[in-house]
Amino acid sequence: MSELREKILDLQKHLKTVIVGQEDLIEKMMITLLAGGHALLEGAPGLAKTKAIKTLASSINASFNRIQFTPDLLPSDITGSDIYLASEGRFEFRKGPVFANLVLADEINRAPAKVQSALLEAMGEKQISVGGKIYMLPDLFMVMATQNPIEHEGTYNLPEAQLDRFLMHIRINQPDAETEKKILKIVRREDMACGDDQNCWSEYEKSGHKISVDEILGASQEVLRVHTSEGMEDYIVALIMATRTPQKYDQSFQNAVRYGASPRATIALDKCSKIHAWLEGREYVAPEDVHAVVADVLRHRLILSFEAMAEGLTPDDVISKLLQLVPLP
Image (cartoon, helix red, strand yellow):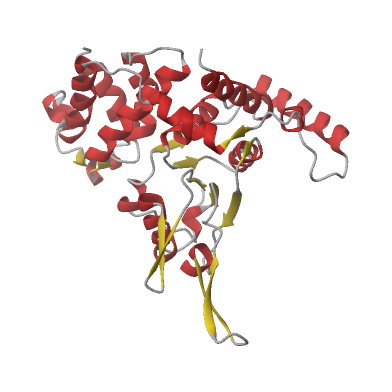
């Protein structure tokens, strides 16, 4: 085990002690972080979406900003804007909250399309253009956006172009009774330990062993050394091609998928599979690594036909079926 991997696993272990019952969410957050990508978290209120990203940020020596998306938000509220300094007779650029290592875009579907699109350049190019000038974002830059799937009034669906910018679309489910009881005990213990102290730190954070930005970037480079065989590459490509023409594998999918996954999905699936293998301690990508991340990588990139949606078919149904039909390497 490399020193960097050991530190990443320690961080992951710490997150699991704070965010109980959301092991899959924590794993996918770590994969997104190491991949240098962005994640869309979808789940009902109260499922620790915001707490998860805030805990991750507090466990890393990195900057963190939170943006609460509302219908009256302006693009400049995110990117920043030029401010005129009358005393000096010049304009000065004041950075917006997007200039941070980790950015929480809370309830991103509450803001109109113009505001949502303000994140496009930042997420895709790691830069912001204001007043004809380009401002670079940090090397470690990750957007974690949340959205509530049970409310539709006063919300704006994310455009497909922006959805494709997200490395993963992570869905969060309600915890079971046993996990719910653990959550209750943890919250009680935290309340007893911290009282009115709003800046109460965990033992992990107090220890001073928080992982640094350079170590995260180093781990991202180490992941690239994980080997993907030609057979696994063919399998990944076959899965992506199957989302574009699923009827070749199952006639019941005839005209079900309007648009399949893009080449960006192929790159994302390859990278996420490598990271999953690395976290599991393997130096090569296996089929189980692909299967572990494929739904989160593809579900927001498949656009189904109206007929398929009317029949209750979901992207997850298509992905699950294709995993059964596409031959393993």
